[in-house]
Image (cartoon, rainbow, N blue to C red; front, side):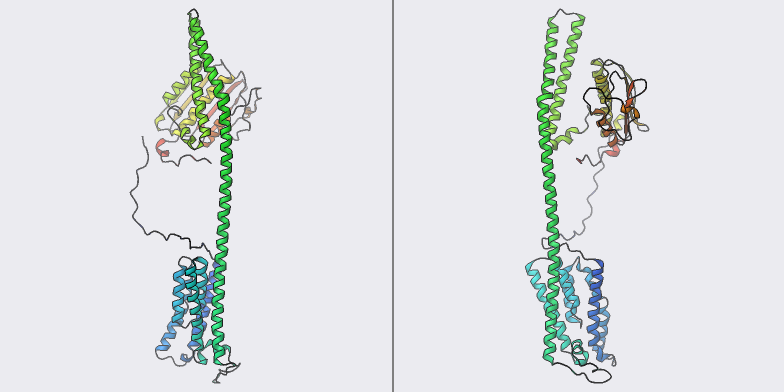
Amino acid sequence: MTYGAPIPPPASPVAAPRTPTADDVPTRTRGWCTALMIAAAMLSCLTYVSFAAQPYIDDPHGARYLWFVLATLIAIPFPFTLLARGAYPEATFWACCAVVAVFPYGSAPALIALSSMLARRDGRARTARAVAAGAVVAVWAQLRDVLRPADESFWHMVFAKPHTGVDGEPIVMLVGEPTIAATAVVTGLVAATVATLIGLHIRSKVRLRTAQARTDAAVTHAQELSRDLADQRLADAIAAEAHDTLAHTLSLLALNASALQAQTLRMQPTDGTRAVARQAEEIRRQAAGALDEAHQIIDMLRHPQQAWEQLAPTAETALTRESLDALLGESRAAGMRIDTWIDIRQLGDLDDATAKVAYRAIQEGLTNACRHAPGSPVSLEVTAAPERGVHVHVANRARTVAPPPAAPVTGTTDASDTAPATPHRRGAGLAGLASRARAAGGSCRFGTDDAGVFHLDVALPWRSRATHSGGTGMSMA
């Protein structure tokens, strides 16, 4: 018998991923927004470096010329650094600040990285440091451009008189240097403020959505707990009712059987009185067993967390040679006439869950025949083998036709299932058995034929114990 797969050796240690903290904000950006950000950062870098490199276009010599060539080449791949802002927002921000501070670029890459970092990382100290650094870099990028000669400066070209500074004509400024510098500084500060507000706004929206999702999850969980509590209260009420009625009735039945046995033994001993005494003892024993089973079911209703353990297949409730012999012996002792055809092989390899369904099929078939056709002979056929699966067939002459289930069992019943119901209360045994059979991958068909014989036919696939020993277990869906 296989008890489970061997335990695999421990995996080799690997680098653990970064554990999210309370300051992390689960912000996600659309692809088109990322593309727009990279394009804007690249345009800013190329614009500023192109103005700064104007004097070296006609005189490509010296170290400064090589410096601007390097800056131009780096300006194209550098903005793609923003792709890493999702996983490493802080590192991306500080890297962009360093590059913008060193190379003659505009402040757009640093400010975009600032917004991204503020949107993804919380914390007052971190926010203050980032905003201050972003503002300094933005102002420095603008002032650096203003401090260059007029023909190398973007801001000077903005305030230059139209049609000057071209074709060898000197640049004529419309305003003084202090005005240009003040405008550049104010522009840098405004851009840093806008970038900060955008990042904080995105962070607030994400925090709000996260809080709403948690609230919805908490409400859903509370509703589930409320339903579970209501179900448990209903189960407790059913358990109390069952204890007050079923257990009481079974106790009286056992007591009356004991009294009948005692009275019979006090009579003149004959073969008839001895037979009655034996039958009374058998009734008392069965009533006591039914009372114990009733108490077990009541306990399952009161303690549902332990119910799945109690419902697990056991040697008494799974199809084995011993359990089958015991079931047939009890039925025959109760007066049932049973003709059997049994061909079972390798039951030790059959999965416990399938074996339990097969056992319950035989039990339900015999119980149904005893209840609805007492005294009628019963034909029982049980076959089980790996190549054929498990097949249970019970047939008996129907004195009283067994009631059909409350709703038709789709795909598993014959047209004869629509036989007229009896005046007795509807039972759920056959419908429950059909549901179990379907859950096990099999089928359950029952009904009365034209000759008045009731048939119960259950077919289950063979599932090896070794194959399902490592299953996932039951779930309370």
